[in-house]
Length: 316
Image 1: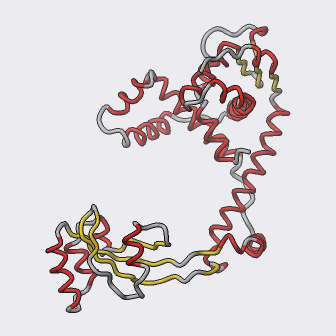
Image 2: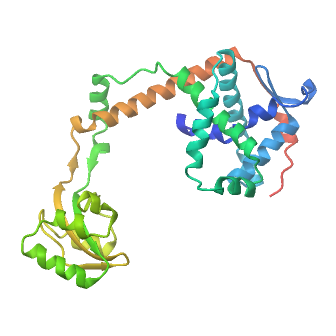
Image 3: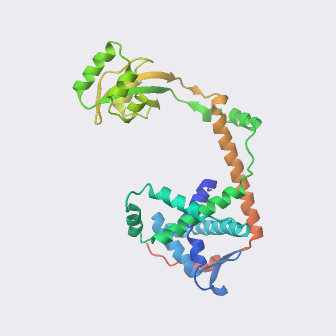
């Protein structure tokens, strides 16, 4: 079963349906296979959409056939949401769309975005329309669920008491490191460390690793999160101890264990925010389901399932 965010993500994959279905001449009633409120989806348009989903998600014809019910349900959900947005005059402004376009373009320097779209045979204007609908679906859902019930302290305590094992944490080490290009450089730094110089300052001034700006602090690590030879050395250290020089593909390292968190159950005070998020999300999903059920009553849905299955002629 999709959770709320998975549902919304899947709806966004097929978000170009609205503008396709609303373009061109009005479809003949006898051609309609899905009707949601005032939105009519014909056999041809549905097949076009299924083929695009097949391409975008890399699915085989057999996988599409097996998932056709899920595809149709999500098409219906997405268009119910858009019908709600239409009735309640929820829109995306030009400024909102422009901001979103610019945010995406930041990840594609130069003309790379156009090149990527061209390889997928997608026109830039079509992509913008798709992005517009992605933003619209999210805005409508966020508006409809704005009054979701927040978690109470009693609910948080009850959840914590009944899910204690979920808050069990392994032994974790907070680690600082210095990295140099050559062994000779590291030997010199090791000599200075042995004489009592501050590792944080040396890391800031001489380490070539990105975290040098943070005085070499790497953060917290459990077993299984470091390279095997580094983990073996580091987890043998006590708080405040330094490793010997370790060579890796990145250079020469010295590690220091700054502090240790012993294995155990994380306390309630440290877990409150996480639990609040879990409970609020559960409340949000419940509210979403009830809201969607209400939309199905407000906007009648008709699906000619047998015709859809009969007309599915896809090749692998």
